[in-house]
Amino acid sequence: MDLHSRQLTLGSGIIPSVGLGTYTFFEKHGSSDETEAAVGLAIDAGYRHFDCAWAYGTQAVVGRMLEKKINEGVIERKDVFITTKLWNTHHNPKLVMGELMESLKQLRTNYVDMFLMHCPTGEKDQGFSGEVLFSIDTKEFENYPLEDVWKEMERCHQLGLTKNIGLSNFTIDQTNRIFDCCTIQPSNIQIEVSPYFLNERLVKFCLGRGMTVTSFSPLGCPSHPVRLAGEKGPLEDPVLMEMAKGKEKSVAQIILRFLIQYGTVVIPKSVTPSRIKENINVFDFELSEEEMQRIKSLNKNKRVYKVIRLKHHPEYPFDAPL
Image 1 (cartoon, rainbow, N blue to C red):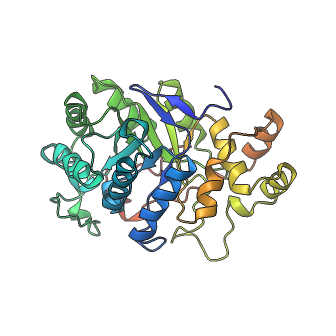
Image 2: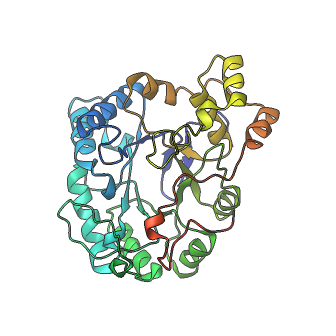
């Protein structure tokens, strides 16, 4: 791996190593207007990778800003990598392509670069009203075979609606099931990875199968609602703070650089202009092997995202061996 490379090779094309996450916890940590502004700032700062999803509720504002920048001649569509994800309420094979078509309308494009299955846990069927349904009662769960969902995603790829297809929040066993049934292999998996949660077994497995790995919540998601009051995350780790001081970088930059050298793509979320600029400025330095090992030693196998409401779903993925 070229330590200074800003992109990785995919099944079809390339994926930039740093992208902008657009999840706002449903406007609890960043409004739609702030997200739209953040996308504009990110483009001006050099970002060409934007991570979206049906469930985030921000695709319309992302699409609006991308269209604005394209019309202004700042970027061309071919220069931008857009990811979106199939939500749990659309696992019914009859709904898969319909959701992607609606996402394309919101994003104001005729294709996306990556279409991921957001989670293996199907929920009660829902149409495309724009509202997101979160099951509370287990009777609202659905369990369409993942293999059948994947076949519909393959159709989306075959029709040119997406250049790549992949997975998110899948276990090794679930990923193997997709490889066993597929005619188009998954190009990417998006999973939680941070210095406190290396997710090493799954990362190694996926890289070994020729997939790229995207790390979500790379900074440990300090604003996540489930983080306990007073609980410290990687951004406050003394080892990382010392390393950042020595390199005259921020702790966030040290973490992002570490995860890129770890072999993953990173998609930090921010609506703060200074942090947006800072998070992509990670290609003018590198970490030594000793520094990499020191950061790896901080691993606590501490997952932030557990999605407890889905705990009793037969495809619940967050208890898999680490």
